Image 1 (cartoon, rainbow, N blue to C red):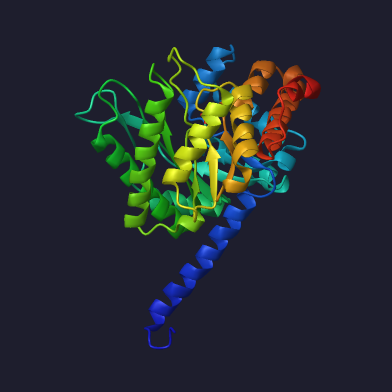
Image 2: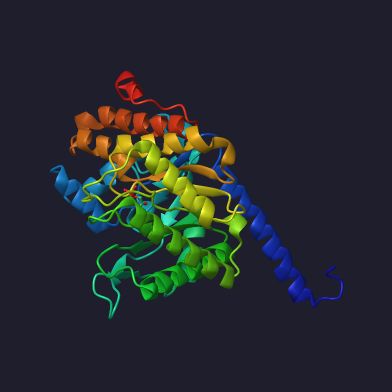
Length: 359
Ligand code: 13P
């Protein structure tokens, strides 16, 4: 079929085929078994904020020690398929000098990297944000690939408020996500595409449903415009939840039903996997919601449905560690426990009493 094409084009086409195969292998490995992803890619300000909440000094050495605790957790690779790192962390090593990225690979965990550079105010639209980081992104992606990263993450945030989100905010953020995804696939990295509708505010579950559905529709329109291969990406959305200050909270079954219905209405079946962020839910609720989706919809899901939590996996471990060496084994046990409970949820086998039994 390529016989009449220019030799250079032949190479380009062959290269793309190779690239796609590698991307799909990475996707399959990330979504394998009952595993999920661990987001440990807090930016320096976010990590410092989490440390401050539990009284840990906010220094580069404490951040390094904390990430060492995570990547040296015994058995982590049994439950976690991929770990998302932050730029500071991808260059760091244990106190014995072993690069974190090498430890992850030894544990069978695929290293990934957050490549957005955080959010800034969206001009002309009070209360709304736009994500930064597209400038020079192809060069950074090539560097991260050379360091061993095989997937990337970009987070867009959408807030719900009296007159927001605006269509302009949704369009601008989803356009960026699609451009980022195309750049990642070009560089051999699987894009994790993360449009997060925030939980902050008094809005109800219906509002979150409507906004999430709209955001996802605009996202897939933009991914199509940028010719992104849907088989070689992973979607990382929020669950459909009432706002944190909504007086009417929802049952686990209602959240599971609303979330899966919303995704079935807006995410093409070609997408291989959906990995949830936890977004400020308690660890127990995030796990219970994922579990309920599998219990109710297991045979109706066209995509793998699993987790890519940061707070909902790390919080108990961070609270246990408190920055003290002597607490490392107990903190690692908490981390491993949360990861295992989320594996059980992905199989639809989680029950709340497992929380106490495993402890
Ligand atoms: P949370 O699970 O804490 O929401 O974090 C997930 C994440 O990766 C945010 O970008």
